[in-house]
Amino acid sequence: MPLNHYVTLGRSGLRVSPLCLGAMTFGDDWGWGSSVDDSCAIMDAYIDLGGNFIDTANIYTKGHSEKIMGDHLGRHAAKRDRLVIATKFLGNLYPGDPNGGGAHRKAIYAACEQSLRRLQTDHIDLYWMHFYDDLTPIDETMRAIDDLVRAGKVRYFGISDCPAWKCVQAQYEAIFRAWTPSIALQIEYSLVERTVEHELIPMGIANGMGVTPWSPLKGGLLSGKYRRGRPLPDEGRGTSDGIKNRLTEPMYDLIDVLCAVAEEASCTPAQAALAWVQGRPGVSSSIIGARTMAQLRDNVGALGVTLSAEHLTRLAEASTPPPIFPHNFLPFVHDNVQGGTTVNGRPSQPWRLAPQNDQERW
Image 1 (cartoon, rainbow, N blue to C red):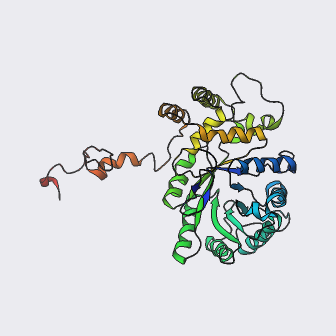
Image 2: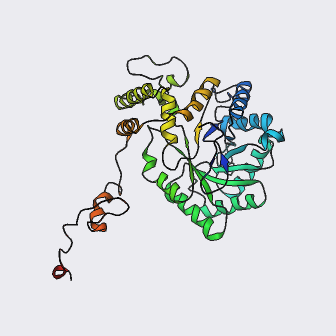
Image 3: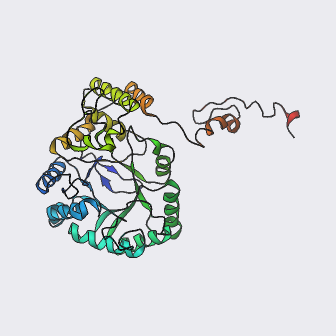
């Protein structure tokens, strides 16, 4: 599957590439990332391969990420119009200003105007609420988004990094009031981070929100460069505590399984990890954060990888998190609910505490 085998995003007609180019690494203003020239080259390569979906945020590299995209894409109508440009609001770029960030009307309007200026465009194709703002009523957020859509400044809305219950509340505020609903859900999802399968993924599927996983390689942990018994890289993320503290024995066990599966599937570990994420239920387009051209080409190569059922089983066994309540309880009620019948292919046994004949039933 190449990048130009597009998919519709959630319950919408918006066509996006199956891998989205993440722009958090555009600019080295945070002390790491890609230079302006490298960022532009990566965007060009992604577009040449058929990609049309680029994701950033107002706060990435202090706003420079949006500016790089605007200079290279936004000011050129022929380039910009073919792309789905996504950015985010909520992050605060103004220390000391309590209204400089948030999901309230004042902050959303200001962030939108600033992003439009940096991106050098008159509209944002997909506008994300970056994370959960527990200080703002969600109906205020949803009405402000609907106003921006009606004003033509935003085309679609999505929710990122937010509790499942709040996503549902937002969705139904929009549905009941005929406002703009969310079509997408951006969450961390990888072989390392699977707890989202408890609530967020099923919620997204049930509510028409296409899932766009971020960090599908868990910050490079699943790239294959961190192996048991090998020295850590002396530069880049390998020197950070965030990587070092995660390299536990269970993590090395998972990496060993991933690398073995990748060898059998004739692909790189990163490609195998991306292929696994992209094949999960509910996933529309995974976000790849390519800092170099080599990383971009390797990541895009994941679209040509097919993992066998046996490979998927081994990866599942190595990475499935333990269930949480009520999911660890609900399997025990199937017999009670189904009464010993088979429904949708799921069998059950007669519940032993149910009346066994008409005389026992009150």
